Structures are given as C-alpha cells and as structure tokens.
Length: 338
Image (cartoon, rainbow, N blue to C red; front, side):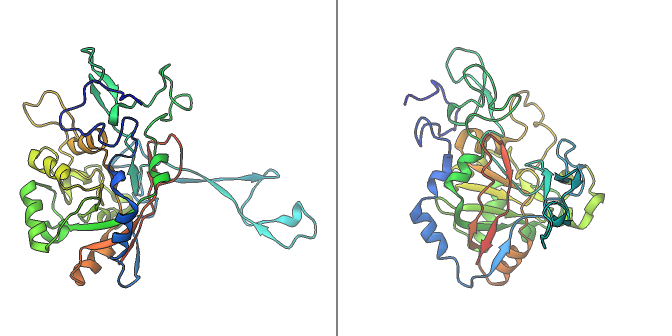
C-alpha cells in the first residue's frame, strides 16, 4: 500500500510502522512486552485508576463537556426501573431495571485517539495546508464525509486502540511528591531530576503515568470546581520546552497518561512572539506526529502512594477503551496491579 503523504511534519515518525498504520507506538506493546510487564505483579493488589465518571461534577473547566446523564428505558409506557415483570408476564417473580446514558467520551477519565487532534499541514506537496491526521490519514472519506452524518472518524477512531488492547508496564512519575500542588510548568530538567531522585528508568514500550494531584482536587472541590483550576493548581509538563518534547520522543514510551486535564500545562495560548503553531504542543507531538495515545484525568492517588511507600515505581496496567467505532475518544476504566 502506498503511503498517504509526500511530506511529513518535521520531527514525526510517519511511515515507521507502515503506510496504513493506525496504532502508532501501541506497536511497541508486543506479546513479549506484556509478558515482561506482568512480572511487575508481586502482590496481586489491584487499584482502580479511573475517577467516577461524574467527576468533574460540573462542566466548569470545559463547558463543551458535561457530566453523564442517566436516562430512562421505557417499557409499556413506564420507566423500566425496579419494575415488576408480572405486569407483562403474569406469574413472573422477577423485577427488572434498565437504563441508558448520555455520555461525553472525554469528560472524565479518558483516552484520546489520534482522531482527537490533527493539524494543518501540506502533506501532499501541493503548497496548500490541509486538515490531516497522524500518518497522513484523514477522518473523512474521499467525498469529504464523516462516518455517521456530521461526525465519526473513518480512520484513527478509538476502536483501533480497543482491538489492539492496552496492557503493559506502567511507570509512575510522582510530580506531586517533588513539586507539591501549586500550578507549575514542569521542564525537561525537572523531569531529569525526578528520574534521578526516584531511580526511574523508562524503557521502550512503557506506559508513562504522571501523578500531579489534580484529580484529588476535582474530588475535593466537587461542584465548586473553579473554571481556572487547570491553571491554578498542580504541576504539568511544559509543552513549550523543546528538550522535554525531544525526551518524550527519545524515551520510547508507548503511551503518556496524567491525572490532570491535558497532560501538559495549559498556558492559555502560545508564547509571546509565536504567531503560528500549536497551543498544546504535547498533543501535537503525541497525537499528530508520533502516534502516542494520551490518557487524561486518571486517578493515581492510591497506587502512587502505595508505590512510594514500597519503594517502587513500576506496575502492571490494563486499560482498554470502549470498542466504539468512529469515536475520537473514550472513557477509561484502567486497572493497575502491583
């Protein structure tokens, strides 16, 4: 199959895993990688790494995304909740409940697929920037149409991640331990300090997890979460640090996850003097250039504290998304095992 592009973005790895690749660095999660990761299970203790999906409790930090809303399933003109079946089947001794949900895929603990964020780039060499995604894919078909009317990705949807499955070795970076709960962009030098101080080694195919304490704040504040919380509390990667971006690439990590809203520090715009470019450079690097899936707003408090108390930083992680074809993201219900 011929590749879909003539030009690829500087610093990208398009084509490394084949001309039609839609997995990116999930290709590093091989069977051997999973076997090695499973050796991190020493105690069999399991941790839920997801927030309740109704956290955040409001849409204050992102008005485009709402908490889930349970909705009724109707049976015989009535809501099918705690319903006696003998109303429909005389003699039945059973009672049934059913429900539906209106769910924003990226409101709470979540995965970003590569369809979540693309770029404007002249991939076909005609001198005109076009909307393009990882590895030269497009979300629409040749007629310019989404998969399901107004939306739905023909390529790079979350179903590819679901089918590949996500099991591997998690590596915890405990930013909260080193930098507290104050809002702070974390630089390459800061990361190197953490790795050295905690004796952390990141290997090819690792799932790098960042504990900042942001999810703790979401739980603590409940419905009183302020709109500016991402910029007033907790450390996060500085996406405008070029050395940090190069480290993400060079590290060989397969996946990057954080307990905060965007993995990276939300500066509120590009630096002064940067007229054109991404507002979220780590999103561009990972989702558009390198094929590194991002996980956001996971819950790491309990496992991070256990790892620190036991002088460990590695663990086994299982974290598939929903198998929802065409979706650009998905809720996550990951499990960490130590």
